[in-house]
Length: 226
Image 1 (cartoon, rainbow, N blue to C red):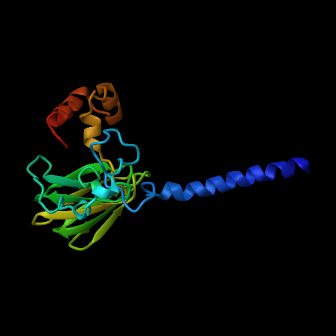
Image 2 (image 1 turned 90 degrees about the vertical axis):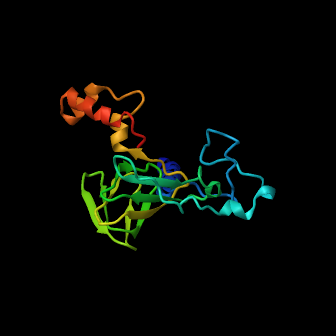
Image 3 (image 1 turned 45 degrees about the vertical axis):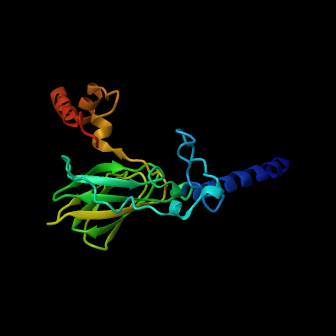
């Protein structure tokens, strides 16, 4: 009986610890501890969960305003898309607030290539055009829909997804994220355009193709910025 009495507080502590971790795992960025923290990007090149704040005395109304998403992006590339990221690096006023947005411009037939965001859930809203949005779950199930103006598609954190213009005009999407800096990992670039390169023997075995095929694909991405 004495042993049971001694272990109960430990068991209770473990249960409470696990319960507290659940909401933390569901959160995006950490909650801010002040009204705002306009990023001072010049103070550090290696931020840890945010940038240092500008002195409150030097903050002005302009720090809360950005026209970064107002201009159409250049889609003159092999994929026919452009993503303009209004994250904390482009809009310092987002620092510590746990939100950001992107503008996705799609030419006719343009494809925002398969990718994922390791630090954020994404919410797409189609502003113009007809766009196929697809997402792949960890169980390799493919979910998709063709969206028109005003429709939304939610992409859970970390899941591979894409957007493709399937309409007869330019496509435009605004995407919202629950992180000031969601990060983007493009599947094609991650496999074939890393520095240093992923070994060919790894790719040939993973994709079950000859090395000549891997070399050909790598050559396609050698000069690409996406």
